[in-house]
Amino acid sequence: MRRFRRALVPHRPKAFRDSLNRWLLMGVVIGVISGVGAIIFYFCLHTGTRLLLEGLGGYTPPGTIGEGDGGSGSGMTRPWAIPLVVTGGALASGILVHLVAPSAKGHGTDNAIKAVHHDPTGLRGKVAAVKIIASSLVIGSGGSGGREGPTAQISATVVSSLCKRLHIPTPDSRIAVSAAMASGIGAIFRAPLGGALLGAELLYRDDLESDAIMPSLISSIVAFVVFGSVYGFVPIFGSLSGVEFSQPLQLLWFVVLGLAAGLMGRLYATVFYKGSDLFTRLALPGWLSPAVGGLCVGLLGLVVPAALGTGYGDVQQEMYADTLSRMSLLVVLVIPFAKIASTTLSIGSGGSGGVFGPGMVIGGATGAAMWRLLEGLPGIPASPMSFVIVGMIACFGSVAHAPLGMMLMVGEMTGNLSLLAPGMIAVAVASRVVGEVSIYTSQLQDRLEGRKVHAMGRVTPPTATGPAAATPSSRPTPEAPRPESTSPESPATGSRGPEPTVLETTGPLAAITGRIPIIREEIARRSRDAGATSSSRVPGVGADQPAAESSTPASPSVDPSAPVLVTARERRRALLARVGTRADSRPH
Image 1 (tube, rainbow, N blue to C red):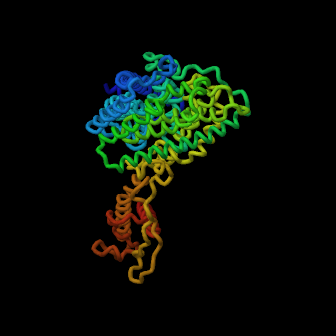
Image 2: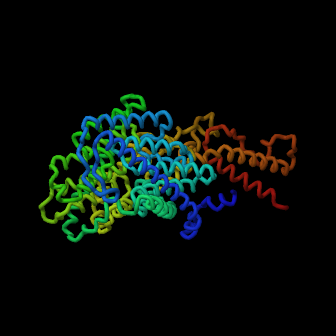
Image 3: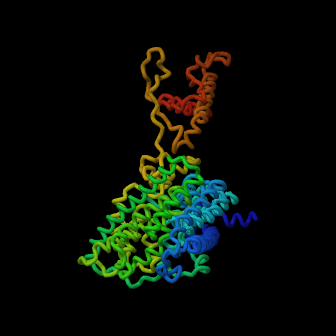
């Protein structure tokens, strides 16, 4: 067992080859865990949708090519049952989460990001089981949510528990949990390369975790193979090879699409967290809030059916010109706003699900609406497919601050990489519009801030919720400087001595400044020893005479519990004491 643990536990990579060798076995284990977790969750979600929304509600939502026949679904045979089914699923999920695992509520990706930064081995194993059941109830009954959040949290939770059992060091546990999150997303979306990059990008708003790329690649490929061996390897939206970028004039329209997608992404994050705060202020029981949100979603779904479920099938239908042209212009324009509202009501109220999938659906619906408005103008393509695909990239790639991963993921989901050029233009413009707002409040600014937070070695509670928490103001701030104190050398005159250097006792340097009292005590002890040695060498000074009569005055004793103030005078004294000790120790 000890030999197996030594072979399994990774170490900090020192080079590219070293990273591959050390993380190969652990990456395979993470990939298998993530792939199996994705299979279990997908099965439960599919079963819940068939029994609840289709069986009891009498409504079959549109499907995708990779997960069915890509049909347009069926009408609502029992419209009166839709609000009841959505409310019942949300209520059952709320009761389960409230009684068993409260940390399973909300969108799971943000919880996984928070665990990576603050406590990579602190996720509890039972959260994974509760997350599977709760998310299947919410989304399967018609609630608006994505599949990536539950899958990411399920994979991260199991791997976190494994790291704790194997006593893997904290820095390596962060990489392992990040790789688990990436492989879970890559498996459920059948996009291993995009998932691997997302695992490195989602941790920061303006940076990526390069150490996690290689383990994420290994685990994502393994998870994709495990999941695909059961549910196939066909891209979710099929192989859309008929669309390509061929007219440079279209780049101008994709810039306009990037502006619209960025505005929708910013609106999505703002409304989501404003709605979450509203449900918090209502002071409802934790198990009842999801049911209230579910009732509102069910009523909204009677007017706009695209607001129900994951919405991937509706995006598939909007990719075809004939289907989109038959839809009412008002409905096409309302769909992205309805999806924002339904996701806020389902997940923002405390329901279990993801915000990744709805973000892509909102972006795709925005692209479809833009194509419908601009249809017939010079440079507008004959098919809305390119606008829908680029809209998905621009909207969620900007608001999640993960442009590279989103471009590759959407390309893998559509089986078409020819739209990367317009996708890059659109997501760059959208990112400028979004700014510092993020759908994931647990993201840090960059790796520099990450290193400071990781050095704390403790969980830091968030200072705010919503988009405001994703701004630089939410980052840890140093302790305010203390007022100047009177120098101990001039208490009688009241004149101020040298201005002391105030060191932080909290914040990123807490791990270092916590040892300051010990260091000062050691300096004081060496100073006393140096003074005693000097007095013994001065003629006429005996052992019974006080050390103050010595030619080398000893530094005053320092109380370790005193405030951490280090003046320039103290530093000079410590330096002189050390020099005197070395001089006395030399042979004469």
